Length: 349
Image 1 (cartoon, rainbow, N blue to C red):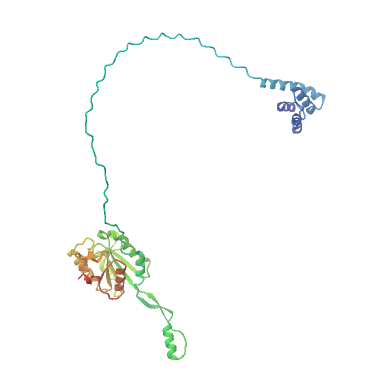
Image 2 (image 1 turned 45 degrees about the vertical axis):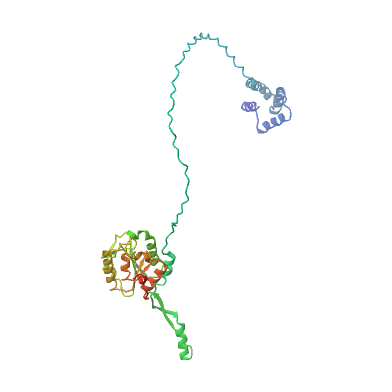
């Protein structure tokens, strides 16, 4: 129907969407049960004059014939020809069966199988217990550095002195004005001499924590750090890699009687050696150091029992030496802030 509609429009019929929809409604309503009924219905709906009816007839015939050809079933395909039979060649006579020689079976060599006793695990009693060794925690370091103070009242006078105010009011018999005192500040100055590399390498973590807490997590206004290997000789170093050399007299020039000095080294106690060269170099260093300040203490990462028979036992008689634990750091700080204590080596001598 669509093809017929388009041909009629090209022929000049005045047809639109309304006429096309009217034809569809007529078909749905049962007015096109057959081809003749469809032709009659479309002729009534789409032809408005006798001229259009005469022109409608040939166009309808052309569209109907074309539709009939399209709907015609295709012819069946031709049947395939039956192939002629092919003569099979005569089968060859069977070859004579020749018996094959029997294979000689070799008798296997009898070899005894290896026999292994079953594995029976034996309960071993190992009394060795591995424990992590922490001589000093970072938190303890931060706590102990708080006690290294040298208060100096040189700030602005804005701190109320309650005791002096009360005493003056009692003495005068009346209260006139409060008394203020100057604000105090911590004037403690610290120099750290840290043994680096060698037998101190397993303890680098703790010496690093000691340095960092003194410089960045304490109230110390000044904390200088210098490194050495085995003994502080004619020069020390500013970095842990021992590359930035500083002459020792230049370092000692920054010291005065109020400067606190803390030395961190095992003093030969790690390997248990007693070397005269190390003792002499340490004695010379301590002699020059004590010409500037007597606030000197020594932290030894090894326990006191490890000092016996090593260079540390001799050096401990020349300087206040303490083990690197919580109590040892606390007592070392008391020494370098001016309090007099007995050395831990008193029981060894």
